Every structure is written in C-alpha cells, then in structure tokens.
Length: 147
Image (cartoon, rainbow, N blue to C red; front, side, top):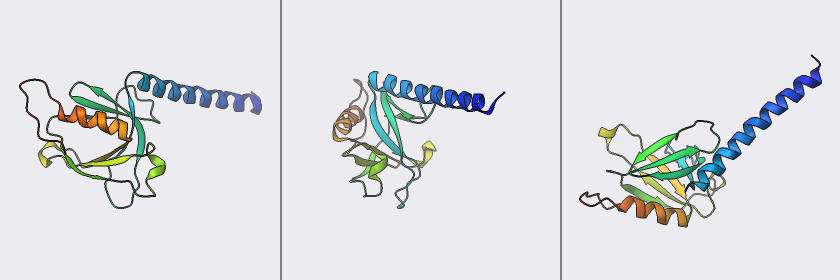
C-alpha cells in the first residue's frame, strides 16, 4: 500500500465524519432546535462553553453538543423544579463560543437532585421561547416562577 493511498483513505474518513456532523446539526435544527451554548463548569474564568443545539421534548429540554456523534442528547434538563438563579450579559472572552447576541442564564439546581450548577447562553429569540417553555405547565401542575 502506497503512502498516497493511506493519505486518501484518512482524508476520506475525515470527510465522512465532518459530513455526519453537519447532517446531524441540520437535522436537529430542522426539527425545532435552537442554537444554545452550555457550560457545566461554572467559574469566573469564562472558559468551558460548548456550542450545541437545544430541543424541547415535552417537559425536558434536550441539549446536543455540536461536535458530537452521540445519537441522543448530551444533557436532558427537566422543567420541573428548574429555576433561574441569575441572568447576565456574556463577558468579552465568552462571546466567541456563543450564539450572536446571547444572554446567559445560570441555574443552581437543589443539591438533592445531584445536578451541578450550569449556565445556558442563547439569542434573545431563543431566550423568549425558553422562558415561555419554562414558565408553562400542563393544567393541574404548578411550577415555581422562573425569573
């Protein structure tokens, strides 16, 4: 096997992976997804943001990391008991890893749930939809005020 054949095979494999990533992202966006950045390591460094696609699935918000071949969501966020701890504008160093014009929401889930604090960043349009979803509930169920 010649070195050029190996290079062509490696390039073809890389191209297939890239096409799979693009196809997955387009499929998620066309099925009602919105661009959302998530950070699960909440600190003052501004690092740790990952761009992805969020999609509403009933009482859960499914988040899919943009550069992942995982078939299912990378994180499921249940609406029940979810409250916004704070809102802020992104800092200058954070904006390259977020959708344009993003606002940052911080969530501090109760310790009993075992979920660590996390932040979501989304555009104003996506934020409006997210807040509507968060504050709504089926008849007969009560949810705490989200903001």
